[in-house]
Image 1 (cartoon, chains in turn yellow, blue):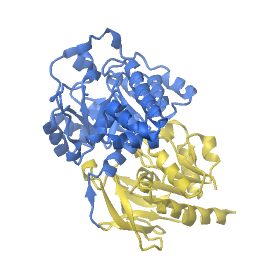
Image 2 (cartoon, helix red, strand yellow; image 1 turned 180 degrees about the vertical axis):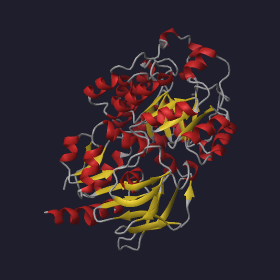
Image 3 (cartoon, chains in turn purple, blue; image 1 turned 60 degrees about the vertical axis):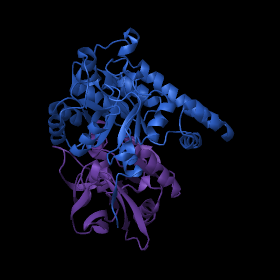
Image 4 (cartoon, helix red, strand yellow; image 1 turned 180 degrees about the horizontal axis):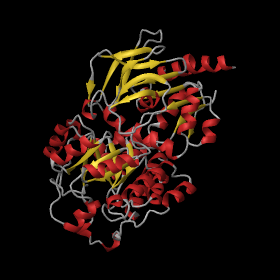
Length: 198
Length: 295
């Protein structure tokens, strides 16, 4: 499985280390040919407005949108969640997302940096162990469409959701050294989806 | 499920999310919008850009809270603001305004010529300038969650930024090559805590994100700093003191993402109009060099 990490801006390096720890050999992708060559993608944490804009400037916006729509498995953390959402609240005027995940997210929903926090949360992957989750100017999911499953919540706001091929979290597992979410993405989301295609 | 704010991970993590991005100095809401539209990852709200502080002289202080709030209302990206070195009350004020990052900055006139702010005391993270590794580690020891090489602000001359990045990088590489029993003396020479020196020697990098600032005025300058190992760049006077700020800002963002592709940097450099005129650092008398503030 060739897994890419979108490397326009954000904490690309941390996602790459997390994926390596899960036994995959990830590559940083920025160009159309690089994106064409991957089977699955991670959208990193960062500034969603910057990443969306750069994807347009460098001519990969439509390609990504199209590949996601055609079923490429994608995991997005924080900004990545916003980029996967069909609808964004508190967006910058004209802000685009790649979409594909039938959710409505609210940007910076937990507040500004002074409100950023970490906490232990339950993640519905069959394990009872809590996950240390770091929320940085984080979004939350305000509305969930049919076929979207909520995997974790904070104060009754969904903060981890998945559909058939897409996984998104408001928090940043890539900066905690806990690889459970990445492993879940590879083993429970990406691998089954890719095997089905074969 | 206790929610904890202001942890080192939350503060340093915020800087991780800015990596590969450009943070732009802005003095009003209109400039902040231009920066956001150009793809800036954050804006630095201040009353005068460094070039004007330099030209006008006088004591440079924290910005007016009204002006900071207008900028916060105008954009959805993070808003940073500067406090004077050692002026912990300015920092408390900025924290109460809910700015996302505080820059304890040598661009403003220092309030304390001995002590920096005790940054562990704050929920809001701090970025501090450094000209060498020892200075960077002293700031981290005081709680800085992000470091920027200082360069010489407000000049449009990238030579000092280059010098500081080479110095920090060189000192890190030197530590990595040392035997463990040599690190005690290295710590003494760097005037930095042993634990941090040991951590840098082991990991081969700073424990926090390292940006570059001071004198960056063109897309090629931004790409140069990225290729020197910067995680991202601050652009101060370089954008809004140039002929076409919106276009130059977007060009610098592009060049920062594709710093390793000269074709993209070339395209980004086309048709930008006039760059800021600038001042050669060598022509600045020593008392007017901002990088020498802070210790």
